[in-house]
Amino acid sequence: MLDVAFARSFFPALASGWALFDNTGGTVVPHPVAERVSHYLARYGMQIGAGYAPSQEASALVAAGREAAARLIGAEPDEVILSGSTTLNTLLLAQAIGPWFQPGDEIVVTNLDHEANIGAWRRLEAQGLVLREWRFDPASFELELGALDAVLSERTRLVCFTQCANMVGLIYDAARVVDRVHRAGALALVDGVAFAPHRKVDVHALGADFYLVSLYKILGPHVGMLYGQKRHWLSARNLNHFFFGDDEVPYKLQPGNVNHELTAGLAGIADYLDALYYHHFAEEAEPELRQRAVFELFERHEERLVAPLVAFLAGHPRARLLGPPEASRERRVAIVAFVPEGRHPREVAEALAAEEIAVRWGHFYAYRAIRELGLLDQGGVVRLSLAHYNTEAEVSRLIEALGRVL
Image 1 (cartoon, rainbow, N blue to C red):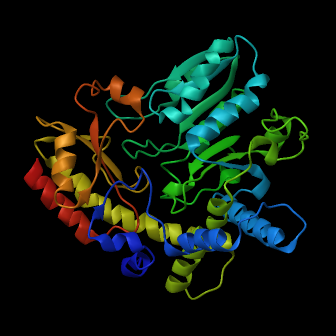
Image 2: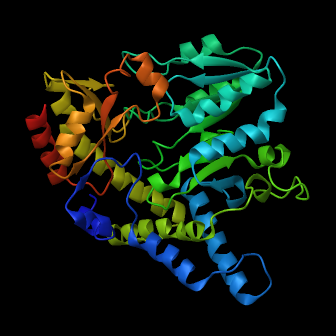
Image 3: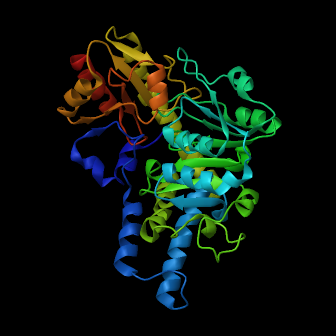
């Protein structure tokens, strides 16, 4: 069982007294991450890649951060692109692989995803591509394979979908979808932004061509990461200066290069996960197995946290729970969304904030899904998103406050 008190001791922000339930928007940062960022800023103010010793030391710290981030999802350092956000990474990807497509080729997007994995691809309609929509079931929130089959064709070149709905926390069988997409002769882009903070990711085992994560939602500083199979990066268009070669991966896909201090700070995520591992387990293990064991602790703890919250909302007469009324870790991560009956979602969030309980309301950039549900004019939904550092006492406090507010 996760020692939550030990975990929380790494997060100075948790001492504020606020109960934080907006973690899908971004987790707070453990002190090993903050210390690495601070150390880099205090010690190194020069460009990386030069021959003199301080620059070489700075380069090594940035490289270590990239490697730590890549290993977090089972990738190699030269398979990942780092930038300021997932939205930016998707726009960069669309520019990099846009020349692969011809007018009349088809790209499939969902109407459920965060707009980051929709809008960049819809912009390609201007160059003659055809966008097909894989629509979710508004009753169950499922992305059904039959509905995918209905929009696949011999012209399909790319399918973009989410591994976990950022609004309701429902998990989808990404490996099965990737297999179906590949058998159709297309490429698969998986949005793992809402999934990766709660489960250990292995992009090689998944088999996706591309995979998106936001590292600031997995305990890191504000950095987005995009995985791509190396063969794809080698054939992608250069987005950097003209004199960089096609084999200069990943630099050719990172115009202006990475943020040095934030990238150096990424190694602190691994520091924190290792500290948790050695606190809970006596045996030595390889880094991959250490992280897998820690994420298993997260998974089981979060399942215990979310179960009473789901049960409360599923049974409340003035709350409409979105998604399945179950807390099984096989089906959902610790994200819960509901529609307050007779009240604007903003009113609920403001009432909770008055009790130092942080939640969020709106469409959460799943704009098309909220529109499909007819909830735009009502202010969207209230979303409650938990992290492993939340406690059962905080969840009880939230449920008690919701009982008064609703």
